[in-house]
Amino acid sequence: MTQSTNDSMILSRKLADELFAKVLRYSRADETEAAISGSSYALTRFANNTIHQNVAEEDLNLSVRVAHGQRTARASTNRLDDDSIRAACEAAFELASLQPSDPELLPMAGPQTYGAVSRYDSETVALSPKTRAEMVGKVIERSRKDHLTAAGIFSSGATASAIYNSRGLGAYHEESVSEFSVTMLGESSSGWAKKTGPCWQALEIEALADRAARKALESREPREVPPGKYTVILEPSAVMDLLGFLLLDFGGLSVHEKRSCLTGRVKQKVFGDNVRIYDDVHHPSQSGPPFDGEGVPRQRVTLVENGVVANLVYSRQTARKMDASPTGHGFPLPNEYGEAPLNLVMEGGPHSREDLIRSTPQGLLVTRLWYIREVDPYRKILTGMTRDGTFWIENGEVKYGVKNFRFNQSIIDMLGQLDMLGQPERAAGEESIEMVVPPLKVRDFNFSSLTKF
Picture 1: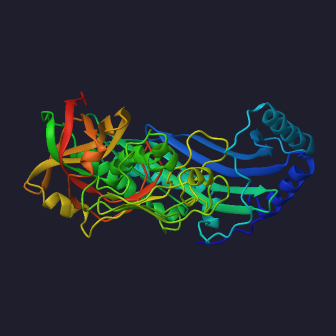
Picture 2: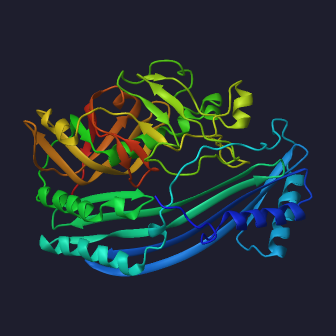
Picture 3: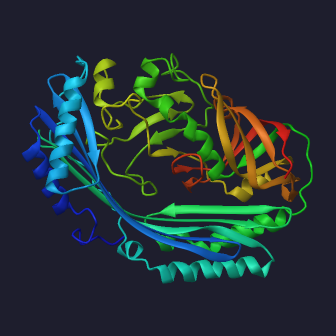
């Protein structure tokens, strides 16, 4: 990773300091907080084997939260002239005066110390439309080689965020971002691959295109397999999109208010012995700032240890309510959600995806899932569909593509039925935030019906 010159960022540390100084000058509240975010983002979109869109945008936002007595409120603006900043401060103050008094409102956090994270690559930030177009051109070439049709996006840019308050807190983070997603379409099949990260060269775009193309080719003329309970190998993208529905359940406030499927189950064995999950913003394959929505340092928290729900995550206010210590997982105040782990890591095993397949006499391989919805929040039953590469496995080999399924499956039960875990990797999907998760071999995964394609 290379470091930024900082002043080249749309939101440099210097600019963030200057904006907060103005906020302090104009605010007349007892306490004042400023959350400042900036992004510079460019995207190349392609479909039908043709680039059809190239866009770029820059954005700066200022969100002012004030506390006046035991009342708090927030106002935001993306106009950063002096008059607009003054107006945002006044709007927040006036809104706070209209709020009911909150006896649980805490004073804002004071100065904090953060662990360093390095997630800035200057080449990714400066990536040109020409380079993105050249890479997309190689993907389209790969598609045409096998008479497929490619569609997807390639984006790059940078984000920065800062949180300051009148009690002396000052937090700043910058990182580069990139994403490549491709779907390869055949007459009767499709394949998909996606990857994100702070360094665009680590996306391995040509390898992703080849993976998507092979999935489309190998699933041509899909056969029909009856719905039922099968051993299934879920690739990391599918695992990630399922686990995303558990994030809020690990929040202390969710458990306290009995909204969580883990209510009454903390310190109890809920999942299989081989399930170990933690949250760690400092993991090398994770992303995001090392502080939460109040500027509190994010701590590494073990959530599940050998199937036991070991810990929850807490914001400052929830921690006081539940006689716990804050873990740096709160959202910006005011909010009704409390907190959630946003840097999930699920430990795996030494096995490769191929090992999982070779160990399976009969079963299914699932590339990814989509249109996932929650059916029962307490049993954590989800429904959704497979997509872009679903295959039949027999005698340890992928034999042919099959028509997609709808599933109805409890994720709690699923995490108690893991026969094998593969090597963890940073995964990207469409239904949740990125995580570090392994491919999973699950027994008795419930597919309830077929789809037409």
